[in-house]
Amino acid sequence: MRIYECADYRAMSRRAASLIAAQVVLNPEGVLGLATGSTPIGLYSQLVEWYKQGDLSFAGIRSVNLDEYLGLAPTHEQSYRYFMQQNLFDHIDIKPENTHVLNGLAADPDAECAAYDQLIRELGGVDLQLLGMGHNGHIAFNEPGDNFGLGTHVVSLSERTIDANQRFFESRDQVPRQALSMGIKSIMGARRILVVVSGEDKADAVCRAVTGPVTDQVPASVLQLHPDVTLVGDTAALSKLKEAGVPVCG
Ligand code: GLP
Image 1 (tube, helix red, strand yellow):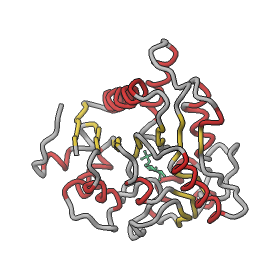
Image 2 (cartoon, protein in one colour):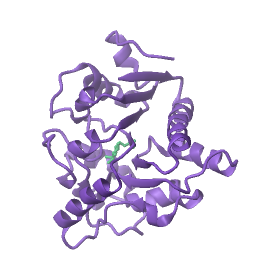
Image 3 (cartoon, rainbow, N blue to C red):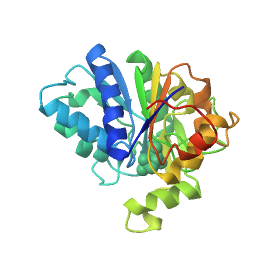
């Protein structure tokens, strides 16, 4: 795993965006796996800026998103489809039909998940998968205890994740309790993985994911077994990792 330390959120966002831009330039018809959450917002905004400057085109890029809340329409302001439109898709030249987000209103969620795995196979797999990390080490919506062997599936959110995500909703009651999520197996199938982390509140999860045992209690720890992972974090998020003596690049 390559680990890059950046001074702050802005620098972290630029570094991560540059890695995605490099991927887009090298493989303009590649498949990007995209993520939501607060952490990637800055890198998406940087990609939009480079697109607007004429430095980057997404015209041939296909994308798949990691997850979606079960029960939220794509037009719901807290749905991940809406997030992607607002933060990236509406501002770049990616073709709408090439953007894929799980349908939170699917009548048969299990069938929706199976079709999504099939879609990823038909696209030829994910070239670069972007990931954030939850406070409990979750990736996408794979919570502690979830089976590492699963593809896309329906998940129940942990209380900690519901707590963390309630800031986006008017009340805790409104946070969906379930989601559709690419599984650890799907994520580990990506050719390259880029993890972005920011803030002291992630330092513990990052340290456990990188230095601790590979365990389903810390889903991100499975990334230790992937051959091509780059983690980009700000100094605060990497603080415990550095205390533990893990070497990082500047
Ligand atoms: C949600 C998403 C994850 C994301 C995590 C952390 O649970 N499903 O994909 O990584 O939140 O989000 P943030 O970047 O806002 O801390």
